[in-house]
Image (cartoon, rainbow, N blue to C red; front, side):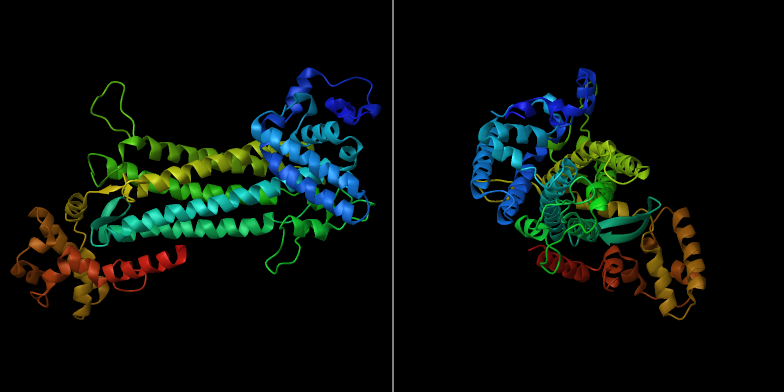
Length: 483
C-alpha cells in the first residue's frame, strides 16, 4: 500500500470490496465534522501507544521518533487551521493517520499495530470527557462561590419560604441560596464519581478480542494518567466490554441532566422573583432582552432558555440509553451516534454554568477589583411578601406546645387565630393580646416576639436551620470547602 492510499477512505479496507462507497453513504456515515474535536485526545492516545510499542520492541526507535515528529507537525497544523479535514477519510482518526503517513511514511503505518479504531475511539472519548469533567468541576465551584458571596451579603434578609407556592414560613434569603449550593456540591461529587469510571483504558482491547502483540497496557494507562484511587493503572479488564462500553457517557449525561434540573429549578425561581408581582430580585440588563412590541418589558431570557435547555440535555440522556439498549457485543456502528449528544451535553452544560456564575456573582471590574452587575436583591419587597401569608403561624403553634398543649390541639387553635386575622385583614402579630388570649389563656405578651419574622428566623437554630447564626456557619463551611 503506498503512503497516500489512506487519502481515500475506502482504501483502508478496499481489497475486499468490488465497488467504492457511494457519496450519499459517505456523508451518512462520516463523523469527521463533529468528532474532529477529539483530535488532541487522539494524538495523546496515539503517542502513548507509540511510546509503549517502542518500549516493547514492537516498533523501532526511529519509527517512534518519526511518529512524534509527525504528530508535532499535525498538532501545529490543526492549531493554526491549516489542517485539511477530509470527508473521504470518515473520522478524526483516519484523517490524522493519513496525514501522519504522508509526513513520515511507513512509521505512520506502524502506529496502528496492536490496536483497532474500536478501542482507539473508546480511548479518545474517555480522554476528552475526562478533561471536560475537570472543566465542569471548576465551573461548578465558580457558581457555588458566586452563590455563597451573594448569600453572605443577605443573611439577615427575610424571604417568604414557600410550599405549594404558598407562603409557608420565613427563611433567610441566604439560606435559600445555600440550598442551591448544596445541590451543586452534590453535582460536583457525582461528576467526580463519573470521572473515576471514565478514567479507565480500553486501548489494547483491539477490535474485540485483544491482540497477539505483547502490549503493556498498564504502561499506556500510566502514561495517560488513567489511574485508580490508589494510583494503580486503571485498565478495562475485558476486551469485549472495553470496546463497546458507553456506560461512562450515559452516566455523565445523567449527571449533567440532574445538574441542569437544578439550574432549571433556580431559573424558575429567578423568573418568578423578577416578575412585577414579586419584584424580589433584578439581574443585569445584559442577561435580559426587550420586547419587539412592548417597550416596557425586560424579559429573563437567560433563565428561561436554561430552563428550556434542560429538556434538551435530558433528551440526550434518553437518546444515549436508547442507543445502547439493543446492541449485542461488541462494537457496532450505532455507537457513532454517541458523540453528538455527548458533545452537545458538554457544550450546553459548560455554557450554562459559565453564564449563571456571572449572572449571579457579577463580572470582575479590572479597574476596581470588585465584581459588578450580579444579582440585585430587593430586601423590603421580600420582607413585605413574608408578612402577607401568616408565615409565623407555625411559630404560634410551637409557642402553645411549649406551654403544654399537644401539637394537634395547638395546630387547631392557631387555625382559628389565622381565620380571625384573615377576617380582620391583619397579620397574626397585629391581633391584640386580648384577642389572642381568647384562643388560649396561656398566651402572654412574649408571643409577639415569637410572631415577628425575625423571631421566627432566629428560633430555628438547629443544624441546617435558617437562623442567621446557623446560616453564617454554613457559609463558613462552604468557603472552607470551596477554597
